[in-house]
Length: 196
Image (cartoon, rainbow, N blue to C red; front, side, top):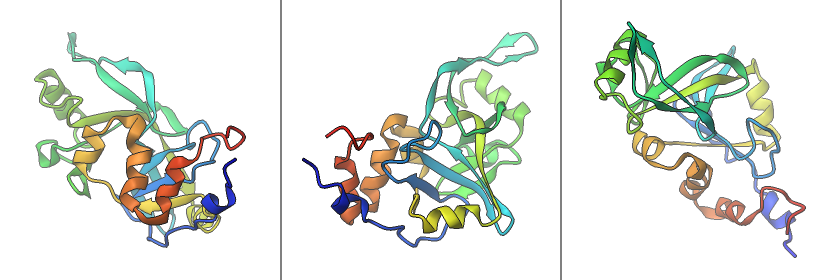
């Protein structure tokens, strides 16, 4: 029988959240959106926080029509519980897409939709360098800090190579591995603590 107490007594790692950092959920968080999730922060300030869940693929794929031209089919991910009918994207193309926001480590947020559509049509923007998401995650003022104090999240880093080249279902484990140390004990825990 697994002694869960020695695994779950790990505490928030005291790394400060910031744009481009990731939130890694504690192993027993049991939520459709946030269970074993990795969230990249796209806007963290004194008024609140917004982020995108990056490791929850949907069964749907997207194909955008532009001037009656069907663009390539792209994988689609569930970005969070807010604005679930809106499409957002992350990519590694930087200033090739005007208006992109640099999150650091070769990850960019959004930019010109028209340019993104053109690059999709040319297969320059593709599954190797972009992810499309429905919805996002949001925290009101102080809410994320309170969740960090309750040890709901660890804060880590990610780079474009890891984001775009790691199978999405393995991003939670890979993020834990990169934290190293005692946090790697979480990898031995089942997602359901009653299963042991």
